Amino acid sequence: MAERAIVVVQVRLGSTRLPRKALAEIGGRPMLAHVAGRAAAIPGIAGVVVATTVNAADDELVARAREAGLDCIRGSEADVLDRFRLAAHETKADAVVRVTADCPLLDPAVSGHVLAEYLRRRPSIDYVSNVHEPTYPDGLDTEVVSVEALETAAREARLPSDREHVTPYLWRQPERFRLANVEHDENLSGHRWTVDTEADLSFVRGVFEVLGREADRAGLTEVLKVVTEHPELRALNAGIRRNEGFERSLAAEGRAATSSQRTTR
Image 1 (cartoon, one colour):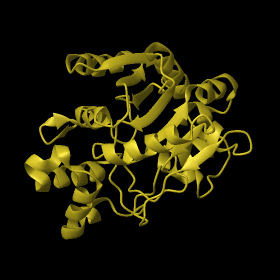
Image 2: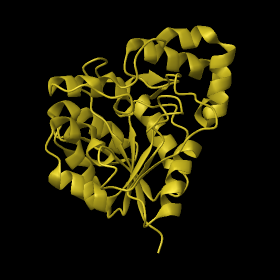
Image 3: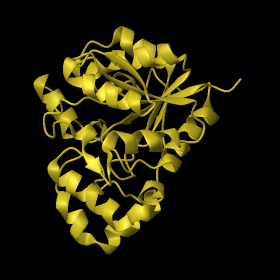
Image 4: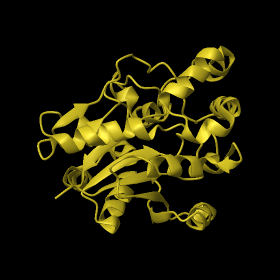
């Protein structure tokens, strides 16, 4: 029987660098709506659930999400790993597809490719991503993990960074968990299409403006064409390191990120 794969979109309004970014307007709609719509178009998934916090500050987010017909689960702000465990349990998932709400240019075809690789290799695989090592633009990150592996991490992980960033406990232990990575033919990891700063938001809004009516259907190829033809857009957020939030989490624990660790969210 085919595995039931659920997309879990992690989101909160209390971002330190760009507060309320999930509700920032892009092309006339909030960023979360773009992410959820693209996530719903991933081939092979059984549904999408928004995983946010129990904080009162996220009540508005939940209300807006439910008005848009999105299912929501709520849990600890710091323990994102447990939020994912709860989402998997509530949706009776066999596998979880992890995406974040700051990726409004997420490509369903790319994410679907990662999921297809996971399903093709089951049951002899626990985790498949396109970020270890990254060859896709930052903002197309997709991780697929079995519920069994997710529950093991939720039960055993102790480091705050493992709880906050969901999957490090798994990919730090290749001798224990069966891992795989999907790579693009060309290394495009230097492109930054995620939203963590005002500069990132300006970039994404610029891309949507150029694409116009085609924005909602644009994938990797179309967005790459835009940034190639409009280098001034790419310059807006050039120089921002990939996944600085994870580096800050490790620094708080007195640890430094390796090159592969810098690719996680």
